[in-house]
Image 1 (cartoon, rainbow, N blue to C red):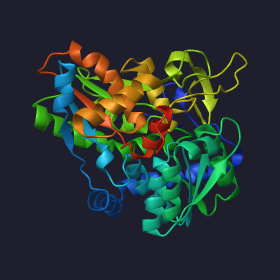
Image 2 (cartoon, helix red, strand yellow):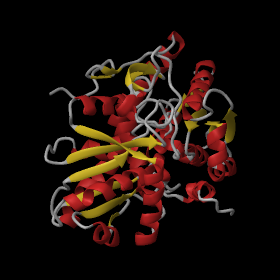
Image 3 (spheres, rainbow, N blue to C red):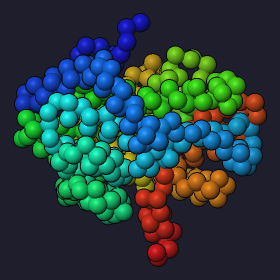
Image 4 (cartoon, one colour):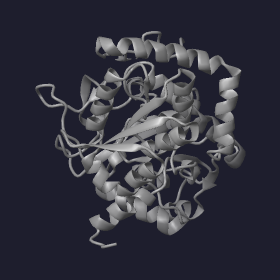
Length: 397
């Protein structure tokens, strides 16, 4: 079987490059630059050194012993991306792309962010490498992620609030793309997930594949074999693609992506693309998109800013249709409950995004045998979400 995506950026029928003519040249430039960089031993060495000495890789694999005992059944292992520098998996991609921007001679980087973790990661990498940085963020996300907004500013980034549309991640991406069209000669757009036009879905997946490569070795060493199940939350899908990538060849390992079920099943009440979406094009790629009967992109809702997005990465669409991975939905209330559960049983406060994956695990762990393992990508820590959860529960900080 040929590796995916193909030369046009398609994973089967999903993916591609649907952009204005003005962006075709910079996308071709980026494709060439990434192809050359990934073959360049010096570039790979510099990235690996930064991931090790600056980001703290490899991140550990933790057995969640009390959680496993509480749920019964399978042993639950956590891949601790929350312990990476900046508190989430986003730094893996941000460092790689900022190194690439410097290699291409682009002194300025821009990015979008929802939960703020990608924005913080890009601002961090830009500060380290001496790049000018601007971050676009929906004003609704600025409200619920105020801590990360201030962190980005501390790191020297300019944060631009987007007060249009749903005022969330989708609208931040729109503004970042407009900026890039205007400043393509000097600017690289550090897209934060396995979204967008080719080569972004494969570029981001390859930069995040370090998660899966480490986890495969670690689970074999700690558990003595492969897990029965690998679980990750899915917004755009970079943390899930990163960990799934190493396990895709092992058909005996079930891969499960967990989407935001929000507060209901009606359109506009959730962000579960595989539960209510259809084929469409958004932000330069063909994938599953939540849309109304007229094909207009629908509003979404999630308690988690990082999952509040109406489309999903095209490789996830391919895995879904080929049945290599399955995708489920978890409600706001279930995610908040899992947020508390992990904190109380393991002393780990997870990001609300990650709490969706944990909530699914609470439903299925008891169905498996004790000698089996569930591997969860703990994609980020929950410091950023404490104020939001407190507000939801009527607690004044």
